Length: 92
Image 1 (tube, rainbow, N blue to C red):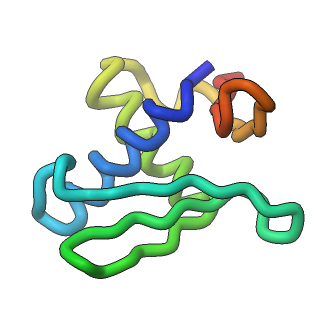
Image 2 (cartoon, rainbow, N blue to C red; image 1 turned 45 degrees about the vertical axis):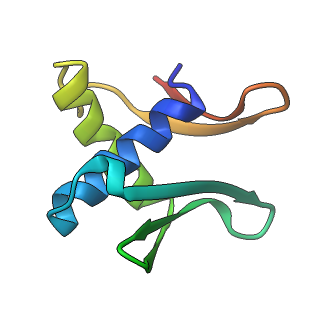
């Protein structure tokens, strides 16, 4: 399981690489909506980037590769909403 804070960290890392900033310059909020599913909003230098589940998965794959030093495509990723832990990701 990947905890909510690690998902946020992954998105920060991903957006930092895309926008040529440091991860600390990225702010992220995670959301779940019955109609939209899982999504995130990342703020970078005053601009908001909306990320769907696919974008969040890509960010997690980068994080798995760079932080865990594992093959990011060797496992499936599924986002889950947990009452106590918030938004988490299950590696299958």
